[in-house]
Image (tube, rainbow, N blue to C red):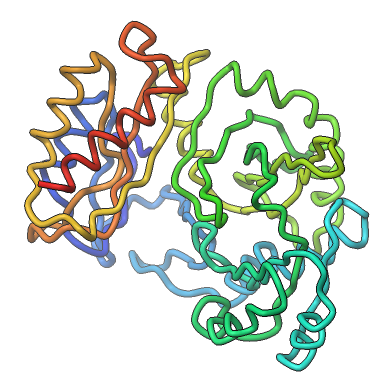
Length: 351
């Protein structure tokens, strides 16, 4: 999301085909910069995660910034905020040792989810549906990075809609930007994000409580934070009623929802649905990605393009790729377009 006058830090070479396609789709590319290269004096540093200082054209790790970022994004700290201000309709419990967790398993009567302090794309958790699944504790070191952790009621099978509210934290307080729908699997794994006026309208009922929560967090955190913020949550069915977990976790950084928001602003998308879908490349053997993409564009008559490179500068495929799409009602309704893209992808993977 850079501008042509920006300098963009690179740690490795980037696929030139990807850059050319991004420019073709109307995006500017900043000047590629490596540490040690010259920068103007008036430059300011903007990071995905705020951890470094810029000194004499080099990024210098700042332990204090890293500690503050860890404090803000810690799910354990965020659990404490939810408990203190009664923000969560779901029961949780802090767990320090395996012995404590085994006691919980022996007493459990409904499914639970174990969560680590930090997570990546919704994958750092373990779902335990009954006490006979104690063998899953072997995964704690690998998936949760060890103790402490916390447990929460698991309502995965009763989740109706996963969403994220987008905010900017300013010196005077949080500013609401919009709402997105997250594409999440039954196990809670993150596969993408989408946004439309219709979906935002369906989420307006949660906004007053969302604003109350985000203002409370803004006024309660130990360290002032200025920058982008996304609060993830979900609707779920319980006791024949639809309930809302408005504050599941908060990302104090540029989230994928915020990136989608910025793309929509750049492309002047106001009402139609658009989204970013993440697809696996690990089974791919032979793949001409731009030929495949060209065919999809031709058949759908809509804007579809890669927002992450498919391969590195040496031609080696990455594990996943992000694909941006825009609704075209003349081709397919929005609710069917994602399914069609996935079908085309799976057909390609079978080749």
